[in-house]
Amino acid sequence: MKTKHTPAPWEADNTGFGKMQIWNAKEARMDFNDLHLIATIYSVEVKGGNQLKANAKLIAAAPELLEALHHCVQALKVINSMGATKPIIERAEAAIKKATE
Image (cartoon, rainbow, N blue to C red):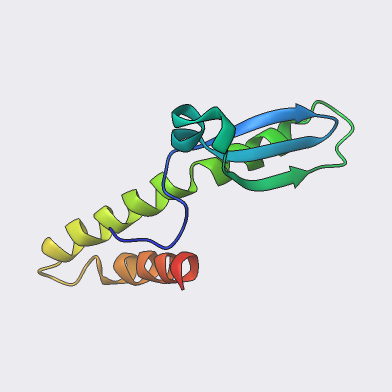
């Protein structure tokens, strides 16, 4: 699947003080001096920071989720002989469009 976004894998890094950063993990492992920062996430949570960490993990998983969804749509199109999966395909394609256009 050809994409415009930074390629996977992405990795969430807890930098402390209510802040997490998302990095391109592949590029980070290849050359420490050429890290690729994708996003910085801030939170004003007082207790534990669980929501911040969960949000960062979800964002870091975005490229793999998008690719998996794309493959699911392709598979559903193959088995859609009776039209039963059409609403699922439409919702998935709408999500892909939202993420890529």
